[in-house]
Length: 240
Image (cartoon, rainbow, N blue to C red):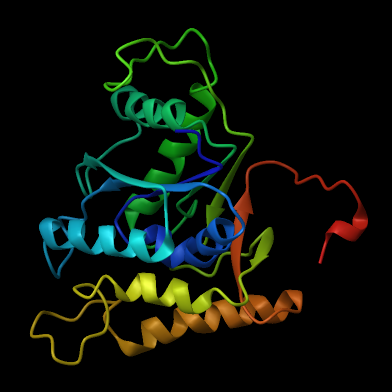
């Protein structure tokens, strides 16, 4: 299946938190979007890998993604090495995305920066014809494929975005997809330990950031991204 956009997240919920509105808007505009979670989030303080599997499936249904898969890498301990790069390359060559979205280049959780570099490196390597890979479902050699662009969504840290996507009209779907992870976020009735993301203030901050980024570009809500190379536009008027 050819996808327009492939979104990677180190943990289930990363894609929704960082790019949920962008995903929802792209799908509403007829784009095919998929999500690849690197780990099952098994080291998370709340919930379990099994619970998060179910929550990720629900969140993906809310957003309307064409496919969602989990690599099963070790939460907290995966590394950016040949073994892991080859597994990501297989995903890129299977779905042949034009655009890849992935974790923040620098963030509070060590997996975010690691995941960012792993996916970015794999996107480059995926275009090298001398790297041979076989997808399980294909049983044959995969064709080399390099995405046109790799963009990094913003997460815990308030990194300065290189551009922002207008997600006005899609913030409710973004928030609904986040709240699908009921084990992870604010629940006043939960008996599990508190974490930095379980407060009501955290959920409010996700909405506030979207409103604040929207303010900066003159729209109601937006999501910010950083880039790896200079962005080109056809005409100056393309910039909102």
